[in-house]
Length: 84
Picture 1 (tube, rainbow, N blue to C red):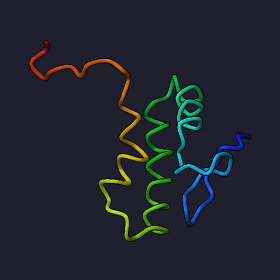
Picture 2: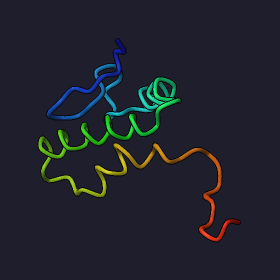
Picture 3: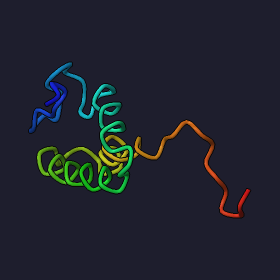
Picture 4: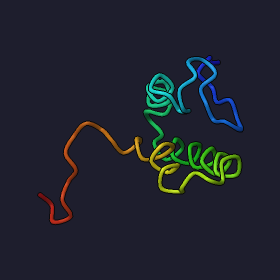
């Protein structure tokens, strides 16, 4: 088990103290779920709901970016809808 797990209520990383998921845990999660991106999104969505309950004053958009927004960043330019 990783030491970079979430410390709930504050949702900080148990390994480095940064907001969870920290950069290290993000790399680990990408590797763990490399063949199952939908499962990664479901896992993180569940964590997002738990975090929203613990941190009701944090805007939903900020929590979404923190927990799910990074999963779509592949380092490649986004494809356009017209096929380009």
